Image (cartoon, rainbow, N blue to C red):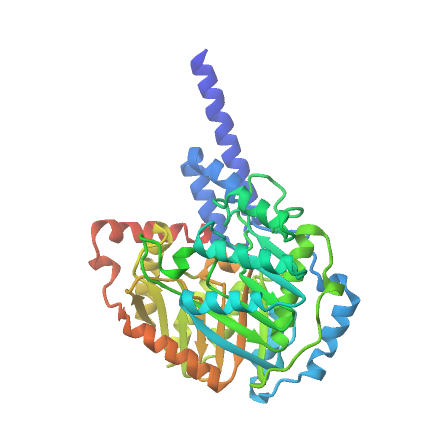
Length: 470
């Protein structure tokens, strides 16, 4: 009898693996993703079937944006370029591409200040929130109940007590360790707190694939912040595992703040079905620097793979210099091809990644890609003074991009992300100086995978097989 039960369970598991494999073939966005899932499911069903239940969703249907629900916003976007026409005519091609990717116009009147590491970033954010007069919008993938998280809670509660409208979006996966009393204290103090996937989200309760990885702060519709830093002490370099933490955030002024605000409105609408359009400030203040810029939001709800399009468009725009900083380097095929071709065209392509291990499998997978890009002429630099978590791109002497998007499959296809892109030589010069300081704390990789230890030599190609799933 026990043998029959065991056989029945085995056949049931095999049937489940075949069924999941069929779903993977039908719905995965790339052939590589389909092959990876099918091989995993058929070779190791005991592990792969549960993994597929949690991670195997490929589409995020029904994401209705706030801009599509508001005639006022649609009308405003149509007249945006008339009010704030781009100043740099030579960039018409890249502007057109980014506008189609993000479904939002590039315009002038913007400025972006670099905020390097936790001290600068949190001081600027908390000072701006403390000065809020009308409302505060905050969104973070991770919020910890520690000193930084405590400062966030205290400043939000202070503003709420002073009759400032405060709204907070958090991601349930990123904030899985956040105690419920933390959120309860905010709600009790007048802060509107919303789980990013409270109402919409994946259809199955098993699905944790689609995460809102955005980090947003908007104060009174006048100043905005986005970048790599979540709300936690590790971003101040206080995690004993990682030590020093290298990251970059951006302080934004000008029309891009309203675009960042609109991204928040869309996420709020998705979670609550409530439109915030009428309750927010949409009177645009032009920054003195008056630079062209755009906020680009990408995610699995888009028709195209907008995360990959973002990387490919900037890579293809480079004519002399392309510097990329990302904590993870697991590029999908199109991005990998663009990077190699850029180096072959004679572009100075540098990729800055951390030597310190954060997540073991993506770190190993990156080693398998390094040999390939280095052979094409790409310089790989390994940051070795603590952990590096910034997501920054510099193109020539003109384009600076700072946001939340990692150079991996998850950011490009599965996460909701955002990035601020500003055009101008002065901003590019500051971004280049920041990169050069980071390169001094790094070493150029020359070692190939074949020269590494047994674990890395054999683990890297194996981890790469799973790159479509990472």
